[in-house]
Image (tube, rainbow, N blue to C red; front, side, top):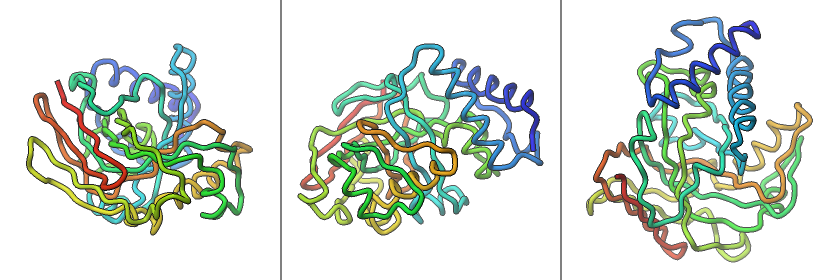
Length: 261
C-alpha cells in the first residue's frame, strides 16, 4: 500500500493535471503496488481539497456498470466518484471543450434521492423507494491519466474519470415508467453513433444505487437525500471535440442536446 505522503502527492498531481488539462502517466505504471484502497484514498484527498476550495458536492457517479463500458475499458469492476456543482449543465448548453483533457460522452440515467439510503444489504427495492425521480443524463468523461493499459486503480484515483454531466428536463418517478427499457440513441453532428437501453446497467439502472449504498456502509457513510446519483452508461463512450453537436433521444424521457465549443 502507498504511504500517506505518496497518496497526498498523487492527489495534488491529479489536481494540477485538471487545472492544466493534461494527461499524466498511469499511477500503476509509477506505483505497481497501489491497491484499490489506495485509489479511493487518493480520490478522497482530492475530493476534500476541492471541497475546501469552495466546490459543493452534489452527488456521486457510478461507472463501469455495463458490459458495453467494461468491454470498452477492459475493466470489469464497477467504481464510483464524486460530482461537484460546477460540473452540472442543463440540456441545450454550450460546453467549453477546453475544460477537459480527454472529452468523451456516455448515455446514462441519473437519480435524485428523496430519502437517505444506507447499507449493508441494500436491495433494488430499497433503492427505488429512496429515489424521488429519474432524469436522463449525459456524462462527459475526462481522464487525467493515460488510457492505454489503465486499471481500476488508475480509474478510481482519477475520480472515476468523471468530468461533467448534462441533465435533461424530463423527470419520472420509478413507479411511472419501467426504467429498464428507457432507450438512448446518441448522435453526433446528425449521425447516430451509439444506441442502448438502460437495462444494460446491471439489469436495472437503479441497481447501481443499491450497490453504492452497500459500498459506503463499511465506512459508516450513506447516500443523502437530495443527492444526484449518476447510474452508469449503457453505451460505449463517444469521443467529442470542439464544434461537435451532440443529441441523445431517450424516448418518452425526452431529448438532451449540447454543443462543444
